[in-house]
Amino acid sequence: MRDLQFRRHRRLRTSENMRALVRETFLRTEDLIYPIFIAAGENVKNEVASMPGVYQLSLDNLLAEVDEAVQLGIRSVILFGVPYEHEKDETGTGAYSHNGLVQQGTRLVKEKYPDLLVVADTCLCEYTSHGHCGIVENGKVLNDPTLDLLAKTAVSQVEAGADIIAPSNMMDGFVAAIRAGLDEAGYHDVPIMSYAVKYASAYYGPFRDAANSAPQFGDRKTYQMDPANRLEALREAESDVLEGADFLMVKPALAYMDIIRDVKNHFNLPVVAYNVSGEYSMIKAAAQNGWIDEKRIVMETLTGLKRAGADLIITYFAKDIARWLKEQ
Image (cartoon, rainbow, N blue to C red; front, top):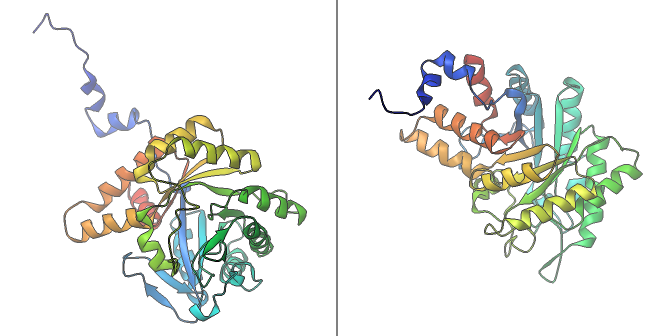
């Protein structure tokens, strides 16, 4: 044995304190953005069947949820609207209404917590009768006419107090249109968190239950990306950078960690990973069946997203993670 020459890597793993000393990647509460679904009506607190622990909340229940998040140290939330079915129309009017659900929710949150960052989901699909992210004509989602409505939605959300605009529609030119709309309205300092790289993914299934936003015909493959494509992600992200994006998001996260790393390596903007509903629900289901240790799996998964290059993570686990980090 004396003649063997090899490196002893285990020297840096001998105790918890030693492992902490050399740890390279850290997950912090400040990295988390917590999604909240605002539902039409009063006294609504509906648990999403496919997303245990996630609720559709009416405006009168919204602040209790935000109170809990703030007490846990969460500094950012993203708001989604879930209107009544009969209020949806062909052009998604509720998305850009002064009294839209996201707009009303934003005003409530900012009045009580002016320093909490409110990210507004800027899309039409929750508000359109057909469930698509743009104007539809003869069964086709039209790109350019949709851009005006997205800009109008963004301006109305910022007028309500939103700190960050997060457009998720994947129309070509959406960042340029929204940036122009915000600048024209005088909101030069409001950043855009672009869903720059959004795949047409099967991982979104539970979200569509939460937001009641499943398309009524066809699918979204003509505007969301093919999961098989990698170089396309860089083209999409580059366009958004040139058009004025301030954050670049990759969605989903877990099956696209290579894309997160690519985007991080190629661009110098903050990278956001969306730990989507399907990723959440799979872990919850396995944990409820006793097959996995939920806490360890969640922390390992999100640490992996940080290691892959994510600066921020949108996750339904945000409150759980904040509790676990406090315990540590």
